Length: 258
Image (cartoon, rainbow, N blue to C red; front, side):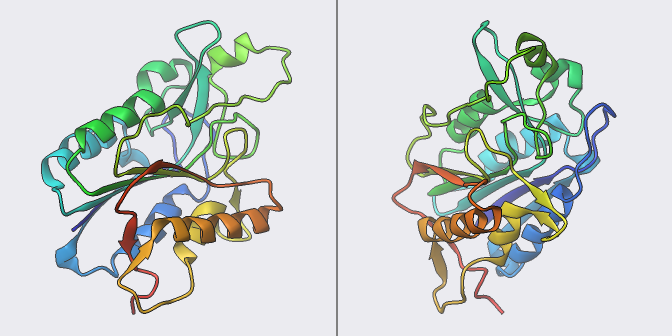
């Protein structure tokens, strides 16, 4: 059984947060792809724009998936929207946040999803499935133009600095059977493009590899295909990264389904 929670946010309640163009349609495109799986073998939940509040996302992932996904199941969590670096609890600490529909720009700490802490908690709570895959089409670099913005506290503390914001996921202890694929490297931007009609990462993910006769596809080979396509398209400015480990790293081959 595949359990999927797909989040796509173009519109933000706080008008100080720049709206996006293709995050919602990216989530919808991935949902359409997953409907190629037998209905009896899939459970897909879409949270789009105003539906994608912090409470709704946390409930779907931390409560519903925890209660339903079992040892023979695969869990997919997908997030397309803004990421934000913001001042952490210590003076020299930078934290990462996933920006939800109801995030307040001047109170990111309380109203967005703390990426490092909550992702660890999600993985700890969803501990039964043989594979939990998290796909993030956002970025935390704070650069202009991508799916990111700098939190106001961090912006004030870095006034005058030209140094890039660099954050590493390598220190996260994900545990066996947990994988994260991000749309770009730590100090890069996750681009949206009218040329492909969506986020570049999700575009090539949905397009997928060449058709094959296998029922499943290896996630590492899928990652290599998508990463290579994104790198080539972006002229090496955007480089997807994979983190984690899993003895079972296969996904239903929706790309070869009729």
